[in-house]
Structures are given as structure tokens and as C-alpha cells.
Image 1: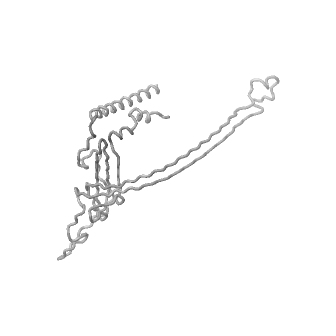
Image 2: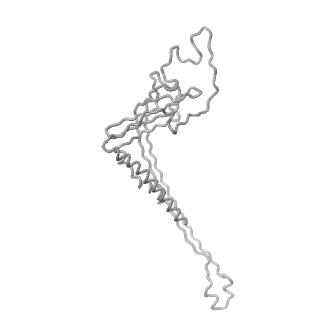
Length: 250
């Protein structure tokens, strides 16, 4: 019964995957000979998965003004600051990622165990007259041998380097004045689209005078760089292979 239920589940998953793959295939067939379409410009806060950021905030301090003074406590300049500071403002994020990691692990383990249990006078065998003391009565209760060994090796050699600029939009101002930003950039070259997404939290003090900020100064940074198009489709395994990779235990 369990085998039947498992087969039904696998078949159901296969049907769903085939349906999704069929819809995607129909969409791809309708775009044969055409460049992939760019994503429409949308409001980031209206995205289905968007959630306002909530972080621990200090108590708000009331602004104090000095009579007959041009200077207000907390101001950064006499004149209006041209850097991003409110929802809807735009700033430039200088993305510079240079990561390199080299890891190598090796593990070796072995174990061997022998078990040999026996009783010479099992069920008072020696007191029985011949031939009962030799026939049909075991002299050993348990004999077992066990040998196990495992060996594992792993290595990681990774190098990533991205240098580019992207404009982001302030989507939220936190109570302590920090800014939540999000930027998306799409570039289409022939039949391939390259997409860059940057999101996170920045301090207004870290924004430079030319209204730019380095990606290393973004808290909770989310940076994604990828693409889609004909080349990306060729590099991806087929839908059936992806389903088998998930379902097959071996």
C-alpha cells in the first residue's frame, strides 16, 4: 500500500512539473526569434514579497532650536543636503565584490569489531549421554564480524569579482534615520539579459558628497547578479532532469 501511495505522489509531482514545463515551453515557443522582454518598471513596495524592514530602534530625540541662530542641532550643513534622505530619492551604489576562497578538507575513518560468544556446556550438554551430547545442540551462540571504513575529501576553490554601478531608490526611512534602498538594473545584449539587484540598509552619513555609497557599507545587503536568455537556457538542465534530481534518493 505504501508503495502505491509513493508512486501516486511521484506521478502527481511529475504531472505538475510537466504542466509547469509545458506552460513555460509554450511561452518560449511564442518568443522564438525574438529577444527576451525586459521587465516592466514597478514600484518595489508593491511587489508580492515586499515587507517593510523592522530593526531595533533607539528612542527618538526631539529636535532643539536655538533662538536667533541659523544653526539647528542635528543639521549637517547650512544649505539643503543634496544627498538622498527621503522616500523616492535616488542614490548610486558602487558595487565592488572581490571574493576568493580556497578550502580543502580530508577525513578518514575506519572501524573493525569481532564478536564470538560461546558456551561449552550449553543446556548441560556434557551431562547428556552420547550421542545426545554431540548432535543437535549448538556449541556457539553468536559469532559476528563487522568492518567499516569511510573516507571523504572535499575542496573549494572560488573566485568572484564584480565591479559596477547601479542606481537605487529609497523605499523606506527607518525611525533612526537609516534608509532602506533597492535598485534593479537590466541590460539586454542580443538575446541575453543581464540583471543586477541591490537592496539593503544604509546610513545617511555613509553617503558621499556625490550621492554615492559603496556596497560594503550596506547593512543586510542583498546583491544578485545573473541573467536569462538563450545562453542561460542552454546552461540549465531540462525540467525532467531537475525533477528526477529532487525525487531520486540515489
